[in-house]
Image (cartoon, rainbow, N blue to C red; front, top):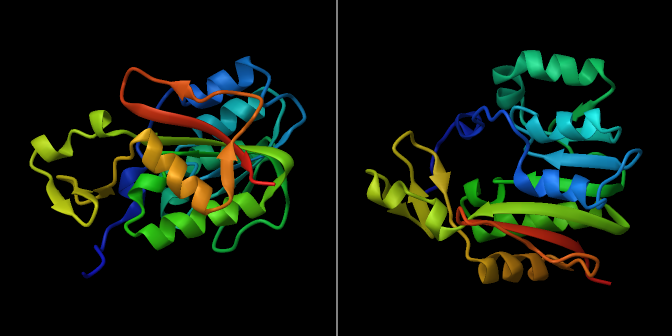
Length: 202
């Protein structure tokens, strides 16, 4: 089956507040001042700038189209000491990696596995991945003129979304060498979003 040709920056919508999993991780002390953090697919930087304001050292890994779309935000982020990586992964290891609503826009299982494996390789021994994916109850595309595509849907604006059950998200994470972190349980959301805190499988 052919790959969709989409502009991935169209998926990077503007949100005002950081994702729930990031707020909860800060509240529970999973991420703290001075931690080195990476956000993968940072979009409008709502999570990265929240972490930066709380005193974390933050890098982001994002594509050029999305950075251009939110250029003023990225200029402020870099001015406050943030680092933006394009094209190739950063060569550091991190206390925490944030990846919210990115896994489900990748169109193949291989791409999702590759992403999670790359993230695992960038976690410190006791580092955590804060992962959020849209669950079936949060994806309305199938009833709003979207159409089925592979294991997900093409949205009315031409983007792709794959919803995950909690078990599906855990399965792909385990395949990439990531398991639920022992120090915390997953955050459960009433909105149909699956939030997981994962660590390296020793």
